Image 1 (cartoon, helix red, strand yellow):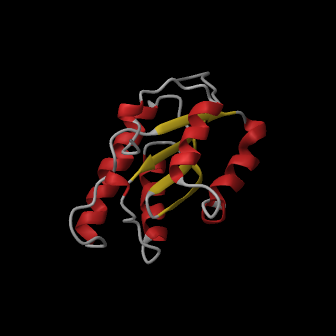
Image 2 (cartoon, helix red, strand yellow):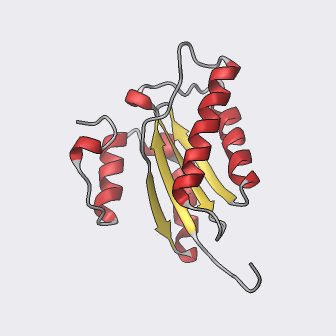
Image 3 (cartoon, one colour):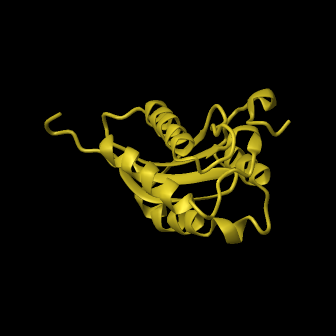
Length: 152
């Protein structure tokens, strides 16, 4: 659309189904590259991606025509299909339903990028559950514990 200018940054978090530790260090970089390709092919910018064996964090510069829910649906559907077709995972790989998406300003990008890059270090002190609850509280997101991944 002509004369449309946006600056939208979204930090997204999503987990492996049943919170399994399914993402192996042997192929996680290939997964991150594949997810980056999905994000970019949909007209968005991947600013950072990293994760742990049970979840992934992404910081995305969002295209003004892109709905966050549609983007995450595409990322999760296509990446799980790719994982299963690549036979990286014994059994059937799938992502947990839902996701977290949190917006940041341009001035916060360096901090968020460093946070995502240091996931392994960060999770020596804090579980994914603790991390995710902190995000929800920090951003004042109302949530129903029954639908909060498989924590409860």
